[in-house]
Image (cartoon, rainbow, N blue to C red; front, side, top):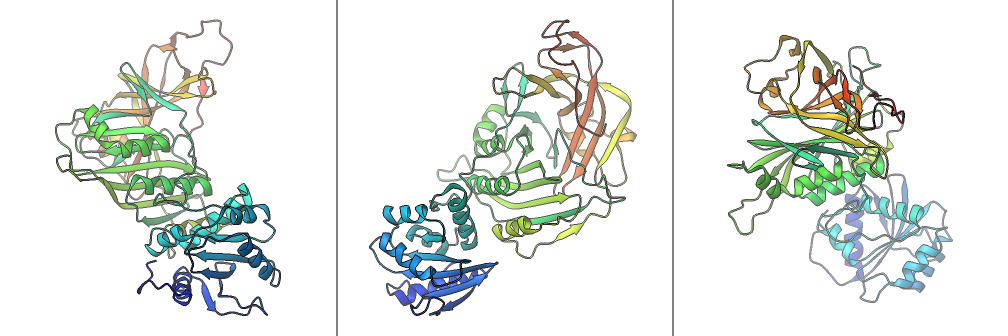
Amino acid sequence: MILRGKTSRTGRERERQVIELLRASGFRAHPNARAAKPRQTDIVADGHHLHLLVEVKDRKRPVDVGDIDSLRARLGRITPDVIRVIFTTGAIGRGAIRAIESDRTREVLAFDAAEIELLRGGRARLLNLISRKRHELRVNGRAWFRRGLTGDYADMALPRSTIQFVSESTAGGYFCSGTAFVHSAFALDIPDTGWSNAGGEGVRLQLSLSLDTPDDLRDLFGYLHSSFGLSANGAFTIQQSQACWHGAGVRNFIAAVTECSQRYEVAALERVHHSEDLIYFDQLRNGWVSLHARQRVPDFDAEHSAAYLHDTRLNIQLSGMPVDLAPYVDLCRYTGNEWAEFQAISARRTHTLRLKKRIRLMVLGTAVQTYDDRGQDRWIIGLIARNPFYGRKSLPRELEFEEGSLHDLLGMELLLCKVREHLEYGDVVDEYLLEGIETTDTADAQIIRPFGTWNNIVKRVRGASSTRRDARRPMNGAE
């Protein structure tokens, strides 16, 4: 929300600006209220199941301990569910911060000059800041202040991936494949939200987002992880005109988005399209979440050109309507989608298609998952393999289905294939076989999960007598 009008140094003008900000954020604001009588209060506001007693200070002197004590004195005259909020054009002194943190029996939330400027410029949402300040005060016992343009949750610790893609030449969080310009992504797992829904797949929430930079992306994922919990190994694909990158983990995804020039240099691309598609797919509670965006890449010949995101959409699919809608309502508010709604998915979107004859794979690398902190318990859970359908005119008939198409498989040089029975890293097998494809769609992209198996172990990394773990580590899946 951008506050209109000339900036005034009078307290009354500041109060009008704060009232406008509160009302724009969905609060009912009442100036000169008598909630704390006999003392007068600047503003009382209510909305979103919150009651606020607001004081506005227009001064250069920092808020000090005496100001906080005065606020608490007023809180003592009103009901305990009311939150005290102070907006100041100055700073919040260290003594005031210690006073807020040391006595949390009555919540006091403070907004300093830097945060007010973010709110005025539309770079922060008031309700989001209130929620974050309350959370930090209640959970971590600290008075939290938003700093910079990186978002309310940009500093949230995101899960670290336990999957690494290993080939003869490299190992990392993602790998590159030659491609035509396709709109599909690989995943090692696809949660089935339709297992209990005859003929349907539950419900879907679709949100449009205003993201601009990788910092905005990091903030969004920080919020999702804080509110819902992301997995460590969500799948992602980044698609350019001649190459695409497949990987695992939200940290690796953000890093890959940020370092586009390095990706292009390593892939030795002859030309670069002005935009690339970003797809992220992950488990979320009893369903999944997907993000689709476009990144306008820098003009590398221009001196001040920079990348930016646009056309970003978030989809959440669940097996049914959640009993507790509050987290989803908060997400809609956080992203500016207050009028979003769940839509029923009346038809099956997830399909498992089996090949009549298994196809031997030419394996170029493996997806290795580590199950311990020391990096010793490592298992092969997937394969990087030559795509046997690449460059063909059509797919085998059994991979065609009425509700959709796997046509994008014809344009991808490599496959990321899930191994149906895991192998201890270092074991050698006689051959790997592609058995089929599982697929679903997210409204913005098709998610593809090839799956396969192996016949015999010809060499064990721990020797034939090893009994540390059974040679076949089963995968949880529908195959």
